[in-house]
Structure formats: structure tokens, C-alpha cells
Amino acid sequence: MIPKLETQTIERDYAAAKEIYAAYGVDTDAALQKLSRIHLSLHCWQGDDVGGFENPDGELSGGLAATGNYPGKARTPDELRMDLKKVFSLIPGKHRLSLHAIYVDYPEPVERNALETKHFQRWIDWAIQEGIALDFNGTFFSHPLAADGYTLAHPDPGIRRFWVEHGIASRHIAADMGRAQGSPCINNTWIPDGEKDLPADRWAPRQRLVESLDAMYAEELPAELTRDAIESKLFGIGSESYVVGSLEFYLSYAVSRKKILTLDMGHFHPTEEVSDKISSVLTFIDEVLFHVSRGVRWDSDHVVTLSDPVRAVAEESVRGNVLDRVHFGLDYFDASINRIAAWVIGARSLLKALLIALVEPTQLLKEMELNGDRTGRLALMEELKMLPFAAVWNRYCEMQGVPVGAAWLNEVRAYERSILSER
Image (cartoon, rainbow, N blue to C red):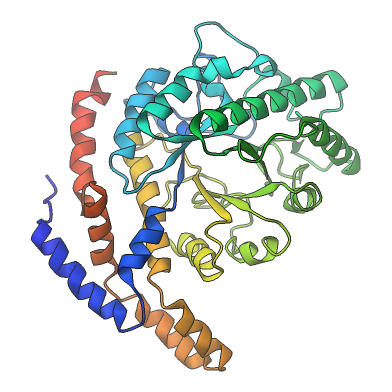
């Protein structure tokens, strides 16, 4: 059993931390207020290893793979919602849920190009009851018409049309979700299209993809209901040599068509600083969606930790004063550990990174830089790592009514004994 911190200890430590940060010109109370206005979009697919409920016997394809067989994964929409409710109770703040189209909750089978809002009505009703806003994702993988690795860029016009229709259906579902919840539903699109070995024609698939996307987005939907996002990739399993939807392709499309660009932290070369892209792309487009993940070697979708790359994304978002233009979502799936714990670890780690950025004396660092004091800038950046951020975080958790420190793990283990072990 992990010990719980007493309220008196939490408040005493926070008072001391507040005084230390104030000496650097930082108002920790204001930072906590800002953090409470950030709403992460948790990914539903962590709870069942990206299986979905479209076809219980279906297998992952399209470059996706979940490793591990830890007991207790969700087998039904009701079980997944039960798990999610537990997860949300352990994460400070109010957050969102990102649904994939394969998480359909309807008694009768339905093809993806025929999906309607009614097939997700139970999700909508549940989310409204829980006070959770939804985001959406079309599912362009794990389907017979995606078996050869192509969807929206497929050379067969009939198959291409099927996926365009799926994309249109997804947009309408997202708009209805946004209308029901009173908050825009971000509808994200990622496709696996590409070649395992060297292609002879890199042009035609991209021309077809432009045509498909234009057809998919032809209908103008109200921005207050839904927003369209497009997600790039460097390479994938089965598309090692060529990906149709590269960063250059989707960045150009986002600029020309005024779409949200999705930057997945696992979709770039391991030596790339994904955080460095924020100031570049937001110079030309209005918003970005981050899929925060952790690639140990590459796009391995490991559980997010409080790592330097995650901190850098948070720092750039705060330093650039663009928190209102950056949407934060999670994207990982680990079947080798308790799935509830994986969700909580990742979400709390990202929130910690954002808090560290919010209590940084950014203005002081910028003044040093402007004055050419690079010595002072580096020295201060290093010393800031030793400031009592943990005391501020613990105070935030207490204010939000969630377990402080690692005490949340006690609740996860109790949930595992009473619920997960029975599955």
C-alpha cells in the first residue's frame, strides 16, 4: 500500500514552493488556474489494445500492433466506459475522450461507409452524463478494403470512394457529437497508405489523395461543431520506403485548405525534435493537434513519461503563448501492463510537463537571451530543474480531488482485484 500525504503536509510544502517561485516572478496560483483550463483528449484504444467493437474476431493491420497479454482488457463498450470512468477519476482536471470509428456501439453490424451518429449514441449519452467532451477518428485500417496498404490513395476508384464515404460519415458523426456536447469535436484522419519497397511512382498516389481529401472535405461543416485534422507519418510497418501522407504533404494541404495539422510524436525520425515544429507550423496555420506518445526506438507507442521530449512540447506551447492553438491528445497502447495504470501514467505525465512549463520564469529567460546572456540562460534553465515543482503538482491534485503522488496506484490495484481480475 502506497502511503498518502496528509493535507497539512501538502499545504505546507505548497506554501514554501509558492514563495520560492515568487522570487523568480512566477505566480503558482495563476499557473494552476491555467493548467485547469487545459483539456487532454484521452484515447479510447488504450483500454482494449486497438481492437474496437466492430468485429470481435478482427485483427490489427495497417502497420499497427499491440504487444502483451496483461489480463483484464475491456471486451465490450460498457466495460471500456467503466474503465474510462475510473481513469478520469484519477487524473486532475476535466478532460476529453477520443473515439475511433471501430468503437461503434450498436447491436447490428454496420459497414464503415454507412456509419451514422446513432451507432455512437450510447457514447454520446454517456459522455454528456459524465461531463466529458468527445473527439473522433475515422478508422482507415484493419479492414479488407485496406488489406493491400491503400485507402484514400488506392488506385481502384471504387475502393477509394468507399473510404471517402467513410471519411464523410466520420465528419458528420463528429459534427453531431459537437452539437450534442456544446464543444467542437476534432475529427482526425490518419491513413496507412504507402509502400514497403521502392515505388516507381510517388506522384500518382499523392494526386489521388488530394482528390480524395477534397471530396471528403467538400461539405463545409460549422467550426463550432467540428474541426478537421490530418495526421502525417514518416514510415510504418509495411510502408517503410514510402508514405503517401508525409509531413510535407499534409503541411501543404493544411496550409492550403485551412486544416488542423496533427503531429504525432512517434511519427518522426528519433533524432527529430517534434517540439521545434510548433513555432514553424503555427506561423502558417491556426492550430495543431499533438498526439503525445513515446517511441522507444521509433513509433512504438510506449506509455508517455515525463521525458525531455514531452517537456519540450509543453515548454514550446507555453513559451509561444499558444496553448489556445495546441490541442493535446494521447496515443499509445501497452498491453503488457495494467491498462488503467498506463492511461493514468501517461495523462498525469503530460499534465506534469505542462505544469513545469507554466511555472517556468519564461520572461526572465527571454530577457537574458535578448540581452545576449547565453551563460545566464543556460545556468538558469538548469537550476530551474531543481525547483519544488512536485509540491505545486501535489497541491493541484488535492484541489482537483484526485489522489496525490503515487497513491492513485492503490485505487488501480483495488479496481484490478474487484473488476479486471473477473474478466
